Image 1 (cartoon, one colour):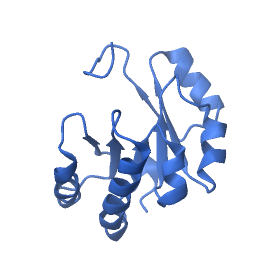
Image 2 (cartoon, one colour):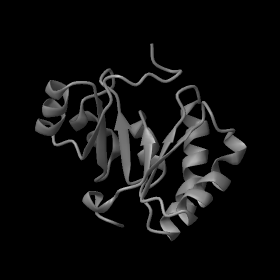
Image 3 (spheres, helix red, strand yellow):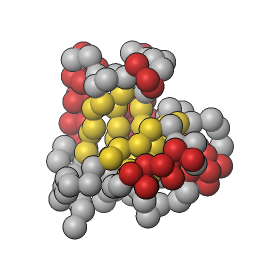
Length: 140
């Protein structure tokens, strides 16, 4: 796996915009295009659906040594050997996410201010996304 600090192109497969049936094809295209890391985001999908899809995607990402990060649900990491879980400010604390995963994983945290970014860093967050001005269709 490529070290996180060497990752420059971060691909997101958001099931709010991508049909679940197209996700593997898109992941393969991202990999062929040189993406360094893929995040699976499925805000309105069940954990079971996400486990199934993460398993399918992980088969592709593992072959190319591309880390797969899933959104919000550390429980997925128990069933699929994903490399990380990304959580928001209202989700579990970083240490709880690590405990729920039952194995060593990268934990990412969304941050919206310098104060939140510093708190994520103190919590040994592996990566954090700062986006104070961007709103997508899932955010209000």
